[in-house]
Length: 615
Image (cartoon, rainbow, N blue to C red; front, side, top):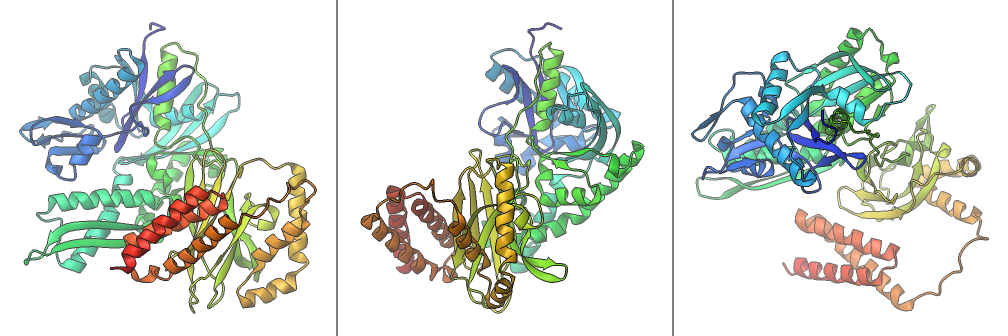
């Protein structure tokens, strides 16, 4: 092959497709926009215009009969797609997607693209592989290699040293699932065994959520949208997919779709429903459990045992669902890695191989990940006794950045009015063995007899700034803290000092701690105070003079926030969300002493309250 020729790597996916190659000395996913992902949708407008990607996906909501999605599931079959007065085979639909990706690459590289490496699931049959090759040929591409997706993923993760590893590649995409046991040593990647299900993926998760929404609408309004309501059905399918995505990082999401149907009198019918991650995971649990059967079958076929697996690589957007990682860690026991973008790692790996085939010297993929885990301490039971410093990470180390995760917690005592949130860095289930990185107090909780649910949301950005927010679910009451340099490494001395200091604080005041449990624990706040008293102030900067004008604005802001909180229980959800968002902006302005941002936030909240109270 000509050393200067361009060969691209293509991940032809069920939900999205990507193209990658070497740019400079790094593999890069190519394409316009930020996502670099082309929705695997093809359609025709009512006027006969060809639509590929985002335009076709958008049309799916209004003209589902003129749009094809998830064609990968039909590769290798005799199925035909009727789009208007035209008929297409699965390879022909796929060829349109491949052609669009090649065009993306040509526009960015400013060179003609004629050759490609195309990936397929390891569990694809010969007929499916041949259909994929045919799609490339129809698109005008020379398919120089059909590459197994697990092999591409292992290339993207950069296993290239002398160490021999047994790697499990767990690939759960939009429409297919397969798991492969792979032996990796230097540049040699050997698939020892594969198993899977070519009819299981995120689309099936979407369908379960969709059925929940359809059932709810039918229960409320007596209308089955499956019958003679294609546009409303397509809108709910889109809403189900978006809800699934949000529940990968949030504990709750709300589905709001207006004007899905009408009564005989012409009244518009809407759907407004809250879904929890707990409910969603209950829906999909049996499907995720079925993947474990393939996991252990692949291990057995490879002549291995679970203990032989050195690492599990997560591939495919559907692996973002926390339940997937939790079940793999529980049942296989090997460390799980997801530090290369799960939607892009197959394309990156294909791009690496394509560039090597073109004669380039390729380096490994580099990514930004969180090197540490973060989470709050909480009251739990240890050895049959209450213990206030139990710990479970919310953000786990090796998670790609930026990231947002949410977990649920509950108050410990009836009528509890406040909680103290202490944030730790580390992985030990005992918070005292981790590093305290910040703390804050949330007061004014609703005093209820039953457990009061509080959400802890953590966001970590590329600059290492950790935002921790505690939210009372029933009212939206919230408070947050910004922790800068959260992922800055601590020295061994600092680690030992933190352990000793926290140990002294707890074991020196155990009786007091137990008494506080009975009152509705203030332990964490006192802990923060003790830490402040013990800290070394010899290097502290001089205190700034108080700013009376700023203090007055802050006091007014707090009064305004308190006034707006009194309205939360009786207003529309959209107004509630806007108020909570303004609370966060005002608090952030206070935390950073940004007078201009504070003034802007206060004015916006005043205007919103004037509008709400005048209704």
